[in-house]
Each structure stands twice: as structure tokens, then as C-alpha cells.
Image 1 (cartoon, rainbow, N blue to C red):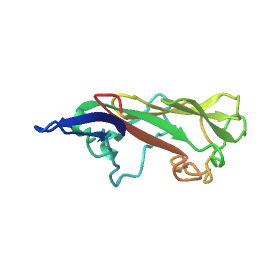
Image 2: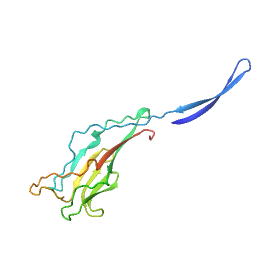
Image 3: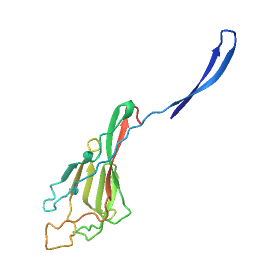
Image 4: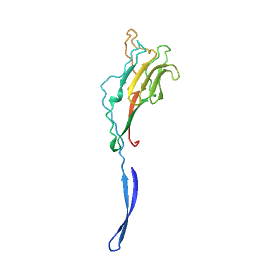
Length: 171
């Protein structure tokens, strides 16, 4: 809210005057953006071929931004990570628990230990909302007789995506 005041003086035709201060509040609406319900199971990579990444446009998880009276500025996307919970993933080569490391708003790495080799990465194109999962090392699976045994992060929403709408005047 921007506030301003204006002093007013009214002169009557008989020589009388009256003064007052007019307070003006300017409400600048800010942009809004909301999430939709996601009906997909997520991004899946198959470590049979570690050169094939999983890619999905997650911008569709959000309703179109309402930029208000100021008009459109843009929408950007960023990754968030919850590092307080264990991932439940273990690097096959070292037997070390995989930990999540937020490298930047556009890159989260799953590493074998806090400073170990990268096991997988999750990246987002901050302009488009396209998310890529790139698995570069094998992880341990509970069913060793099934080469396609699925394994996920132990806690839901350990890696999440945020959309930020900015209107034309920067709100």
C-alpha cells in the first residue's frame, strides 16, 4: 500500500476558507498463481540406460498467472529441497546413503554422501518449468532379482517446484 496526503483549501465566495487534508491510499494489486491437482505419478528414469533422462514440463501444474492491473511480467520456476529427511536411496557402487544437495534454484543433486559423487540430478529450466531427472549411477534396489524394481525418495515432496509470478512493475 502506497500512502500519500494532499492538503486542500476551499475558498468561499464570501471570503471564508476551509482547509483539510485528504489521505490517499493506493493499493497495488500483486500477481497470483495457484497450483492444480497433479494426476501423474512423477518422473521415472530407467538405470538400464543411464544416458536416457526423464523430462516433463511441470509448468502445467500451475494455473495461468493473474498479473492484475499492472500486466504480465513473467513466471519463473525454482526447485526446493527438504534435506532434513533421509532419501532412502543408496548408491550401488559405494553403499553410501544418497543425500540431497541444493546446488542452485535450478539444480538439486543426489550425492553418495554430502561431498561424494553425483548419483542423480534434478534440474529445472527456470523460464519454461521443464524438469529433467538425470541418473548417472545405479542405486540399490530392495528386490535384487527384478532389474526393473522401482525405487523412490523415502519422503513425499523432498524435491518440489515453486512457480513465482511477477507483474510488469516488479511485484
